[in-house]
Amino acid sequence: MRGLRSWAIAGLALAALAGGASSASAASSYDNCVNYIDAVPIVISTPGTWCLRHDVVTNATGIRAIDIETNNLTIDCNGFSLSNLPAGPGTRSTGVSAWGYSNITVRNCTIQRFDVGILIAGSPPGGGRPPGTGHLIQNNRLAQNRFVGIEVVGFGSVIRGNIVANTGDRPLGGIGWGIRALGGVDIIDNVVDGIFDDGVVTAFQSVGIFISDFGRLNPDITVSGMRIVGNRVRNLAQKGGANSLGIYLTGTGIWVRDNLIGQQRLTAGAGVWCDGDARVRDNVIKNYSPGVGPACSDDGGNVAY
Amino acid sequence: MRTLRSLLMLSVAIAFLAAAANPAPAAESYDSCVGDINTAPTVIATPGTWCLRQNVITNATNIRAVDIRTNNVTIDCNGFRLADAQAGPSTMSTGISANGSFSNITVRNCTIIGFNFGIFITGNPPGAGHVIENNLLWFNRSVGIRLDGAAGIVRHNTVANTGGQPGSLNGIGIVVNGSVDVIDNVVDGVTGDGSVAFTPYGITAGDNNSVGSLIRGNRVRNLTPNGSGSATGILVYSTGAWVRDNLVGQQSSTDGIGISCGPETRVRDNIIKNYTQGLAGLCDNDSGNVAY
Image 1 (tube, rainbow over the protein chains, first blue to last red):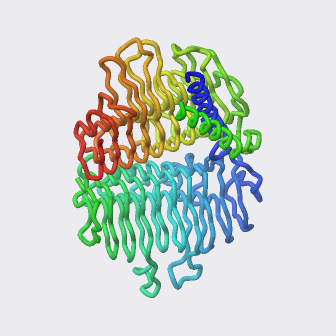
Image 2: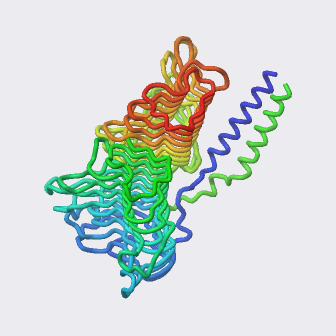
Image 3: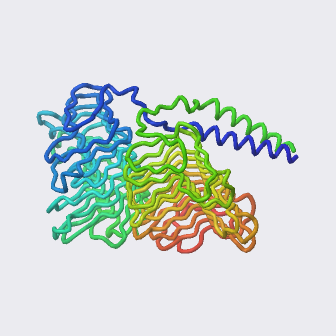
């Protein structure tokens, strides 16, 4: 009896070790890299996976550090960092940028101290280079970017599993954004923690997550069905007459579910603020008044306290 | 007898399948590694991904086996083991440590065995953006994982059989302080050395002057109090935490609390089995909790 128990325990231990020895996500391989990003600024006009193989630092202001000029492109930082730290808070540089292309992926990056961390966008509807489709922004850290952590404009796109921390400090900036999206973009399982001002301005607005369809820009183009699910939005600064908004929605058919939106103390603004047709369910909101804005369709399960 | 035989067959089958279904560590890629960790202690002062390519074993009793002293570091063990088992239960060593205001530290794919603390990331003030994921913490003597900071995540880890530090009154599977989310982890087994009253905790969360954590989808089982001690599955002493969809269970009736709450803790859809109190403290019961 005792022997059998020992064997059973040993077997389970072996199973645990066998499982432990097989990593779910191995150290990154460069096998798929078509080329490397060793310095910035760089313009990329060849599709494929472009990789970082060491940290990349620039002190340049007003640049696009990685400027994507093609469709079907992946930036894989393999855990390395892309930093604009030496440029200071007045930089107007962007970390990773694309304008008017499709199927852009940015993954496994630590992007820090740019004005905008990631900007994948296009011209407004009817403009010269309309926004593309199929973008995927996942598993990145955006740290201490000055104005916006992540911005995606497009269709059929996903922002997932990113950490956007301590955005802000743009000199005399009146607003800071954690994640900003226009179009058909799902925003899933991200952390937005900390948006703050430069310490000088007297009024400052924070927006943790913003999403809009294109209705305001062009009523002829409508998208719907965007999901804002499982995000955690915390610690947004608010100053003067400006509001702090945990999740801010404009547009139609947006689903907001299972998000946690919290402030340490009572904050002027709203946890979820809707300007359009948004279904809101099972969110937990702390220290905003109101928790859920009056124009939201409250489908139940929301807790605001 | 029959049950044990079945368990034996099942466990061997699981071991076989687990080994067969997963490639050998040699198949992993080391392309992104900026350096290797071949011995302990090792001090990491250069950012980037530092890798294990082999098991690293130490018998030292008071070291930081991997001591991180800079920002933007990933420790990727590629499934290999970092072990201090030979040091015995009295060891005061830590497996992977960062003690400073460092940010953006990742620890992944590690099997960490037999340290006093398996992983210990802290600072004054603590940093931001840490991720502890896909690790197996096994037989660490006091704490499996401790992470202090902002915008941190502890996810998809298995923390098994924590405890055994001689004379220790407490053992904890996972400790977080600050706005750290604890998602989809297993804490299975926290046990004392049997010599003193012992109070085990599965997961504890403090706020560190931030707004609370999300504690979601974790499974906490088999906490073993001793003497006048009692067990607590999830202890939240932060404000504004959100505790949801966790499974907190004991095999038999246990003196203690399934989920113990600090102020303004929202608790929903958790299942708690065999604790004398399911929910206690300042929990705001948002429904869906089952305690039996």
